Length: 301
Length: 191
Figure 1 (tube, rainbow over the protein chains, first blue to last red):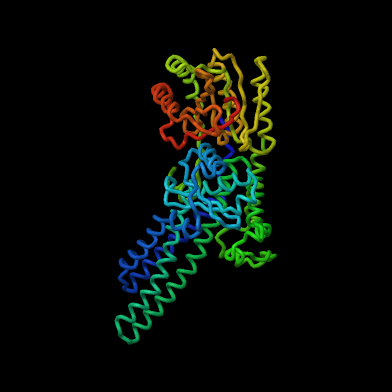
Figure 2: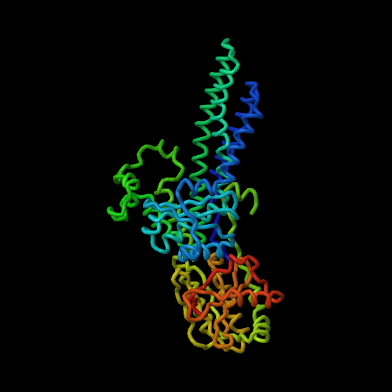
């Protein structure tokens, strides 16, 4: 019987499950609150669902526009396409479109509503800084996001937060429209405000926690697909570490706008743990530790 | 992929399908009869070599296995993308032996737990006026596609001939229907 080196990470699965459970609980509480307050719940739910659906449906075009990325053909970027081709053949998944964003910050993202309609974008800064194996690791990480359907999962997960924002607005609007200034209007208004803010805060924390677990999941998928966890670790160090803030572009070539992004290398230590709670990506050390563990598993005879 | 796997961000690694390779010798006869392309006796197996000692062990096992029949020593070449290609040379008349050797390489890799890293296998042919042609086998999809580079050109493919070969072999080999998966293997060892 063939061995498999794809052990499931039970800890990660359990934590993700816990986070999802928390998010589900938020939906229930929110629905109950809406019902108790006598809101026209259907309308609010409908509007926020429509907004979010639009964001999800057009996620590829929206993100490409926001990042000023352009799609490239295999003729324009043969090397990049060839790496994506091979990764997709190994993972047996449909090939996403490939884009490049002209930006010196080393970064990459994948988006799109389904694996068939996805796009993987890298910045020119990433292409300049990473070597072949590191680039392959980063692309495999983004392809893992596509395969795991992370855009869809995160869109569904962020529903409560959007809904809470809508409640604040419609509560204000509703109380003004009714024009009644009696005691109960003020109380209802305050309760709605408090509920929305609390829901927003908690769902925000949970969504970010979920996002961090998805990142770890994508790192894991990438390391096991390429069999090169060390190359990915080295790419992460280059992208997220202090090294990323050292520019590669000649200062004479820099445009006025990108000169603004010329941020000084902030040597901030991550001592404040609250910062981690609000972050969408796990700390670098945690990602490197996971990759080191996978490297150990790959070396086992 | 199940719903739970999507929710939990997992994906089962694609399993390579190894047995479709054995249909190659008969397909080669058809190719020779209809289009005068003859096998060169060269085949190669491409995989992304993972880091670590465990893989080095599997690799030396593969070498020992292929060298055991007293033929020329097996070559392992790395391409520009960091993929390793195990080159198999056999008697051109007997494509069956090349397929058996390729299968042995695959099986060793899969048993070592490196199935996910298998990329493709390639069997090369030469046509009239020494035209190169390769049948590429995608392990994870379990399908074949033809690859015909234009001689003396800078990375151009003869797509018309490739489509003809696909139509010819359609009944004998599982041909890849999605043309965007027919990725190019320029300068692949064994081509």
